Image (cartoon, rainbow, N blue to C red; front, side, top):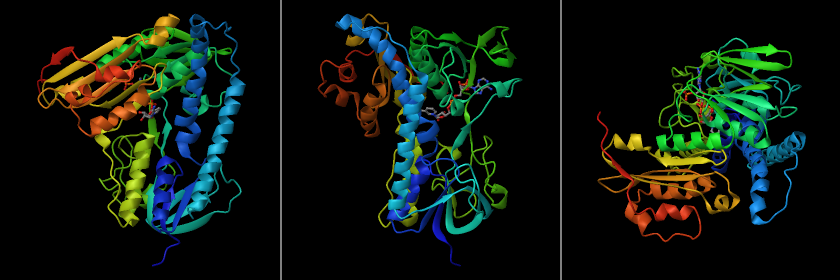
Length: 465
Ligand code: NDP
């Protein structure tokens, strides 16, 4: 049997593009099918535009803080349309880079919506990216599903009145009053963006602290930082309904409270984009949460069909999707052993102002394996002592008591993601507290605290199992 391609990748997001490029570099005949936008969620509706908007939202505080440094600046006004247009120009530039990159790698670009006919055949039909394209059928020896995920909404009356992150990137104007539902990555980041740009923000979440899954000290520090940014937190609250009241929206909570706003934003998780893939024509199975099940080799339950990135039940982060795609292409077509990554020490960052970044185990997770030593420091960075701003940095080392290995590092503070990326190497290399201690600091920085925390803050005994 001869096929049109050795490998067809469905989805030109971070994971799909890396997989396609590496496979083509190994000599495979590769095609990539994309229905919406080159570069996928990260470039178009995720990491990249989000980070640009976080940067935009930081300027107001910077202007205010500059006064104690001798600058006479006035607050100024923010023009939302200028920001969105600049962001869109940057994305269009990146879309072009993705297309060029794929073409230069000798990859065939197929625009349209792909649906499985069988395990080797895809039917490609017109999609928003190629509305007038003729339907066609293509075959491949192997197929990779890299279609990513899409935001979900809570199933409550009036949910259709709420936006998700997909719409937030292109709103015609900045809403003056925003209610954010959800305190995960997206909820926290966009609450910070809108607050920084001048909106009144109410953050609604169902726990006692935001950012479930992160270290408790960081969650507490973040709750304080959210308050310091002027955001109102509604804890232990569940949305019941959204109603339209003239030009306004009213979100009602299960505690009876009603919040009036111009925009209700649901940041309540994402689900895999698999609905229209025709998976019924394959033997692919999904997990209870709807994500495609794969084995350690990224192969689905249908032989020869693979899945990478957010569509699978693994860590849903761009760099992980890239690693999965790269590793898969190396394994399928490479001559040398495939490049490997350590997923257990995947660093994570939430781009609030100030951001939170983390690598390794939380204190609670580490205590499951035995007693731990905790080193914790909380301070006001130099910039804010002079500026007179309440903006703390919190740093925490979680050290396995017996081996003295540093198994977790957690930071809330300016440049935390930049610091953590470097620290993650030390955690992956399983370095000890003594290794941190014998490293000379850079003065004056916040990061030097990582190597100067001498006194143990507390000892946490092994958690009872
Ligand atoms: P998250 O899973 O991070 O957060 C979802 C939020 O919605 C949580 O606060 C959750 O509460 C809440 N929620 C879920 N269901 C309900 C419900 N029925 N009622 C009330 N609250 C509910 O999802 P996001 O949408 O924020 O982000 C999706 C994913 O995208 C992230 O997990 C991450 O993988 C990725 N991402 C990464 C970013 C980064 O790396 N900086 C940035 C943005 C996204 P609870 O915690 O109580 O369950």
